Image (cartoon, rainbow, N blue to C red; front, side):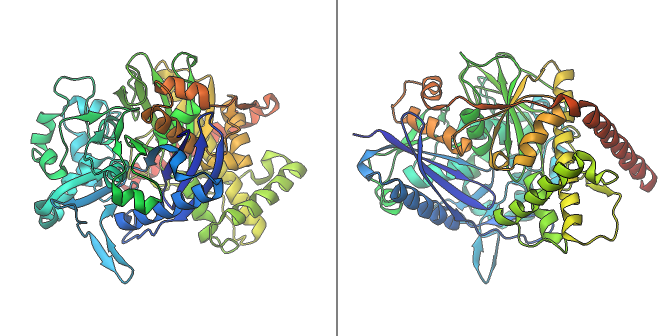
Amino acid sequence: MRDHVIAVDVGTASVRAAVFDAAGAMLARASSPLRLKRPAPRRGEYSSEDIWQATVEAVKAARAAAGIAAERIAGLAFGATCSLVLLDRDGRPLTLSEDETGTFDTIAWFDHRAAQEAAELSGFDHEAVLHSGGSVSPEMQVPKLVWLKRNRPELWEQAGGIFDLADYLTFRATGSDRRSLTTLSAKWFYRGDHVLPWPLGLLEQADLTDLREKAGIPEFILVPGDAAGRLTAIAASDLGLDGEVVVAAGLIDAYAGALGALPPPDRKADGELALIGGTSSCIVGYENRPVFAPSLWGPYFSALYPARWLFEAGQSATGGLLNHLLEVHSAGGTATEEQHGRVIARIEEMLQKRGPGFADGLDILPDFHGSRSPFADASMTGMVAGLTLDGSFDGLCRLYWRASVAIALSLRQILALLSENDIAATNLHLAGGHRRNPLLTRLYADATGLPVLVSPTEDVVLLGSAIHAATAAGLAPDLGAAARAMQATPLEIAPDPALADYYARQYRRLEILQACREALKQVSG
């Protein structure tokens, strides 16, 4: 009997896979690291073959640990970052660069090489820009494609299959090149609510009228819950499964997290948002109506649930900022989970003794990799005020704590923007790696004044992909039914009212430092 599914989440640094039963219990989880090349500041590249092999390793390890036979796996679903895979007309990798470790054919999601192209697109008078929050991000695929055509014309000439990573994985698994409405809506300017979904006028202005030809995008698009096909014989052999496994349409990792965290439409109350925190953070919600706001990506029609409008705000570097601080500080080191744990344990001691103000006087703006929301400025940089010559471990802990506070206060600022645009948040459903960071979990509640809901499921992003896999495989009639069957009741972390005044003052300090940054920019300009 096929009554289990496998969920895959391809993140920035690793691939994670897990086996779930039809009730949403995660039986086992495994991960495999990814090889990431950083050829220049604000750039990153992967090898699609490496990603596939890491996926294979994680899937095999998870199923072995779960002790579930291949014949009991009904479905498989991929969630992935919005990295961009480049293939030629025959499906072979197009080499962006190479070094002694191999070749690289995939532009990382966080890569900002197309900043100039994104700025140009932002100046177009087109509704696609409106659906990008009024400012196109270099993390979207269309500016990256413009960059590729201009700067690597030899690759553009050979191109015949350019994929969002989640769509590439379904292609690799099934042989089908059908794309997901979710990926196309969020990163390719596709309009699922239009009879003519492609922005032909914008593509003509951008000299990308050959986009669909070079990317190899067919006319038929998959919606969430659809099956892309069954595993090919080669993919089944690679993954240790069989050809009866149904593969779901691809999902963006943050939207998989939203699917796992947020209640389905018949249970969702107004103002419920998902906070998916990893290397970056995404604040995702869906409504019955289209919602527009500056720096807000979307709204995207039916990109998660049918006839609902999905929207997304974001922070470009959150977990990535904390990793960076560990790795550049003299008392830090490699940003392992163990090293984060050491720092967090010491901060907990300092909080117990002195309260949240133990590092006051140290103020940080967390925009070290630009700002998605609320400023929509990929060129924006972070700031640190109040540094001393302290290179001790406690000095690192103070910096880590204040960076965490800044991340939470930046989230508060995003929620204020949403409130100004008729989206009044009532709670935050937390998903992603931040769920395992007790400092951030409490800070998100205390700094925003909102309850944070934490699922007992260890990995909610994988749960979202499991819900997707179960739907595509027919274990549930639709996404809502699968979510009702597989989601568990979350634990609520309430904000501490005694800290409300403290974080209000800290929020004011954040705004003052932002004003200083802007003033300095005006002087230097």
